[in-house]
Image (cartoon, rainbow, N blue to C red; front, side, top):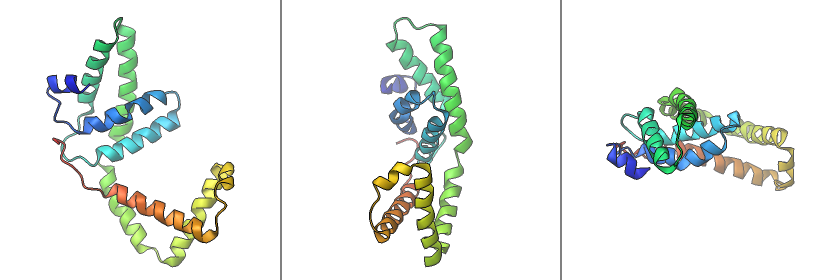
Length: 172
């Protein structure tokens, strides 16, 4: 992939490495629309960290060139199938491009505005929702309430930190 990207003049698009790192999971979860959307959501957050233009069609061109060189009996069905996959993924990612910066500011403002009662409410609701969605999780979280609150605080701090990490330039 990296060779084809360089030959095609896209070697400087560091954001393509993010897509490439997620591509196996994307392909594996193509039949599970919720999981595929989740992967695209996370990928859009990772791509948002790069400054500069992000042209998702460039990834498609490199992806197809790479696949053509790897699959001996490449035919029109392969072309249509892989193009369909990428067009759907690109549509999901494109819908989110540019939004993480706005979401980052709003999330930071939201957490800064919370008092201890608001934080307490969030701590309780996180586990109520989690245990409703995954009842088996109760078997793994048998700690004290204080410990559960600490875990919630650390995970929300980690989420905020993930969103505000330094953004490299697209050419890196």
